[in-house]
Amino acid sequence: MPYCNTAIRWANPSLQIGDAISGSVRLAWKYPRQDTSLFEEEWALLQLRREEAIHDLFRRSFLLTSERYLRGELPESGSPGERLGHISSR
Image (tube, rainbow, N blue to C red; front, top):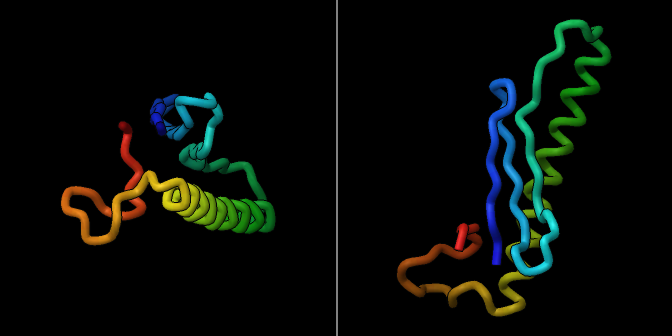
């Protein structure tokens, strides 16, 4: 059973999706802050890390959806009312 925690700290939103049964955090995300004191090379490296984090986010989302599918927690395709791969807060 998933649950979602959201927060805004200093105008930067964050999101955590966790498993209510085990208490483990399955997905954590924070809005990236811009640091104006970085050199151009450091800024480019930071951008690459952010892009990698986005790819990791989608990979983890895919794996969680696959896990739910294999456990039978997702509706069969064509079932009305829910979309496959949709993360809900129930």
